Length: 108
Image (cartoon, rainbow, N blue to C red; front, side, top):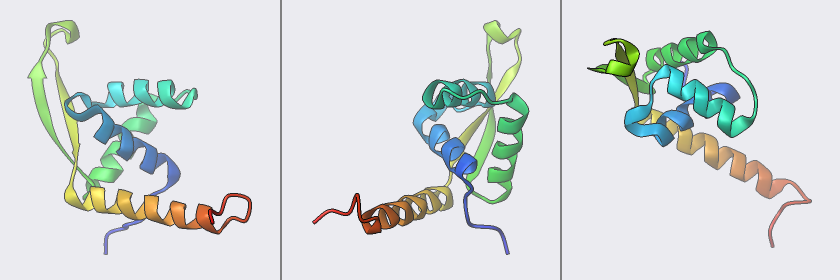
């Protein structure tokens, strides 16, 4: 059976793929990670996480068009699958549930 849980880093990478849309390729995901978290990340860590998320069925990818600024090289563009969206939703719901139980932050 495939793993259906997300680690924290995987969750952030999956969210960034959704945020970036058509611009969700490894280098751009790494840039956005650093911009959003103010933490550095290696491109290797992003590549391996994107591959792992694809193997879990949370992402699909296809080769984009070549671009002059990349010397004609094509980019692998990632997209969240329906299963990936469901797992993200479950992760969010779980975290919200925990926060609502924390006495200092519970509403009501």
